[in-house]
Length: 161
Image (cartoon, rainbow, N blue to C red; front, side, top):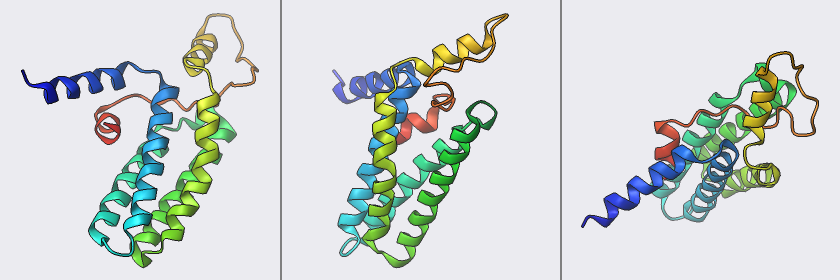
């Protein structure tokens, strides 16, 4: 029996069926993990540092591309600015190999990770269903528009698996 193939299939199914909020939490966790590893390897293992920064860069690019500014409004704009900053810090660390850039990214992303963890599972989907229900106005609920519309895809599965 091929256990590694079974585990891989389970992971892919799990990622494809989980809620958007949980997927974003996993992506943030993975990105922070890559920044920590890049900072640890900056002094003595440049190829590993570059590999980890490349993986973090792929995640932040996916997150930035998933933002829906028409739904998220100012929150989406603010997240885009944060993702732009993180992307810039990745490029700077690739150039000067200073671990401080990875730590800057970690400091910016940790509060966002905690905020995403606080969002109840399915909150984004419930809000979208409510917005699209006939005869309803957009809700003014506390968590409205906090979850960017992320469509799970091959690239997200491969990055976080």
